[in-house]
View 1 (cartoon, rainbow, N blue to C red):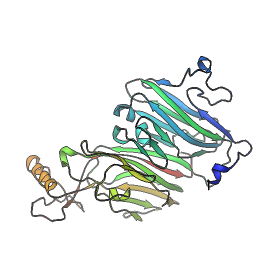
View 2 (tube, rainbow, N blue to C red; view 1 turned 180 degrees about the vertical axis):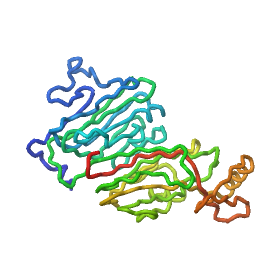
View 3 (spheres, rainbow, N blue to C red; view 1 turned 120 degrees about the vertical axis):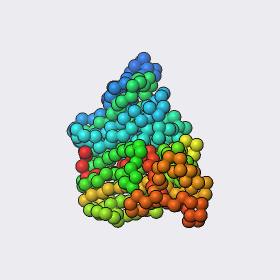
View 4 (cartoon, rainbow, N blue to C red; view 1 turned 30 degrees about the vertical axis):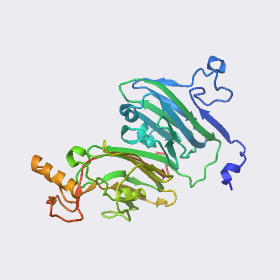
Length: 361
């Protein structure tokens, strides 16, 4: 059986609109005109400091942004993190979406990886696609800014929209909140979503970690728990996980995999770079007043890892602190606990949190 949306005929006024370099304004009977329709403008350039509208509809039009696809010739770390995607709904001056291009599409740490999730993917690590539905009631604008020092020679894109839809009053607006801390602060949990007020639903998150190998060697970085502070939670959360890799449905470490609702497309033990995601579709997280989402930076060591940290402490004089209240130096002696040591870490963390909210900005 097909979902009803797939088998439904269009209602009166419902239209399909495609934006691309061949029809940047998405107008009727206006696509592919350059070079007499013989593929005259499949891409555009984007100079350093320039902003381009990938899609834009005026304020009297309601609808849903259905799909974004694009590819670029320069997929260097500088460009993946220096190109910034922004989305605005209903004429809002502040963007509801504002994120580095790579991070928004789940290509974390400035590295490309093959994956497919419920809403995002890259078939061969050369392109970006997103099918997360993004409704609007009074116009929309999706833009891309080149904040790097270098021109981008080739940008190919398609943005697919349905216009003329009447949105249900209970339909929320998509927001994407990007953050990065390099390094994080000892015993201060990294915020995936700073305190946000309103009524909404947390949809999911893209995360990136570059673990500090010089400081912590090859020790495990992912013991931190994800915490959801819901509707006024103060010191302690209502929803609390058990560990970083547990949150994305794996266990006992984190390799490379990609599934619909959770995955880790990037798991490079050589560079200590990890990119992973989690979508809360089967297990929705609703809030009525407020939400704050955090993750701890806690590591684990035993055996060779414990000896590495002990030797580094002797060499630098910088202590390693046990996970817990206060900064208490960890016992790194060889005859310490057989289960190893949980310790506080500082690494390079980045994220894009996706949520539905009851307002456009």
